[in-house]
Structure formats: structure tokens, C-alpha cells
Image (cartoon, rainbow, N blue to C red; front, side):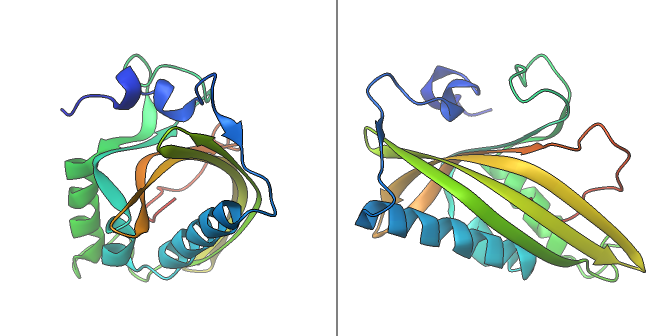
Length: 180
């Protein structure tokens, strides 16, 4: 398993004491917000390869199952994956024989309240979302917060770490077989 970003999984989602808020009127904020909206569009459109291309090789993807501040190495998580495990997830989602996404979920997410902090070469981003899923006559709504650690590489943003905290993770939900 790869080293944890910044020493621990929790540290990947916490700004340093020297982190600086990015104003909503700055070009950096507009660029980061456009990236977050584009990622949502890729997830909703089942554009798996394009979504995976947004991730850095040291990536951490975490969806806690209970409280958002528990240590994922000591607690159960809905998803807790590194880059190679994400690659496996994408391979499975693209497989035509996958029965858990047949028919594919119709997804629509609304992203809002984007807040960004410059933290050295990284930008720590927080956003809220509402995600609607319709599949096989069943509708489900998920509500949550996403926290990202982004950095620039080769002219674009890459995701170093992403945590998705589902506010209704303690309610019964179907198997999450799509991208969060």
C-alpha cells in the first residue's frame, strides 16, 4: 500500500496552519470550481476513464461509513482505496457483464458551496452535493460533503485525495455501484 498523503489519511483532508482562503472572485477559485463541476459531470455521465484520469498516482479515495472524522485504518469505510484499487473499480464498472449496473443508474448531482484554501502547492477544496439516482424504477437521494486535495500537474488539476461524507450514510441504502 502506498504511503499516506501528508502522513495520515485524516491529514490529507486538513489544511495546514499556513493555508490561505481563496476568494470567490479569484481566477484560482474559478478554475478549481470548474474542475469540481467537470468531475461531477464525468461521474454522472459514467465517463469512467476520463474520471480516472483526474487522479494522481498517490491518490486516496475515502467514503467513511459513519462519522467523517474516524480513522479509516481503524474503522469500517464504504470505500477506502488507493490508485491501484481505483483502477480495479473502474475496470469492473466498465465490464459489460457487470450486473450491479444493468441498467445503468441515471445520475444527477448538484454541487454547491465550494470553498477553497491554498495550502502550499495543493488546494484544499470542500463542497456540498445532492445526488439523485434512478435505476430500475427506484429513486434514491444521497446528500453529502466532498473534500479534495488538488494540485496542478501538466497544465491541469489532479486529485491527490478525495473524501466523500454521505450525510445519510446511517440510513438503509442500496449498493453504491456508481461513482461518488
